[in-house]
Image 1 (cartoon, rainbow, N blue to C red):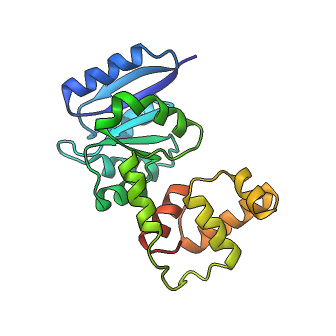
Image 2: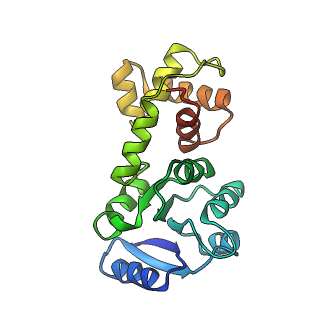
Length: 209
């Protein structure tokens, strides 16, 4: 069965182009598409897509604001941001809002389906230039540990920021997956966040890793 996709994109030509791409891939089906996010919460709740593709800059309301409201409803559907923006502010705002990945539109034709597959598998895909910027942010000096993270929690958070899976972290630190989960739960509590993307975004913005 094909996974259902909900698309928000105000550029009519690009929206139709993405729809045509969906028709050629047997893994996905475009359930619906809209040129604004004014009714996004209602539409997501009714359509119940498997994945959401979200433009940032749209008329009347931004995609970032829509993502925030969708997450506020407790909806955990993966959301892949599609945008022309590759500046720090937009990237971190999107991640903090609860976006699952961030793909530049210039890479759509070559990387869209790979990014969708990655996000459906629990990853956080990013365009090369975005990934480079995130890595550069990670390499900046560490701030004072205001959240009282333990040495192991900082190691786990750093590994999480690199996109490593629970199993990879368990192997890296010679601990069980359940122990990794326990550490991550404690990290979420200390950082006052609710997801991996929020934790990583906060860690990067405040230079905790």
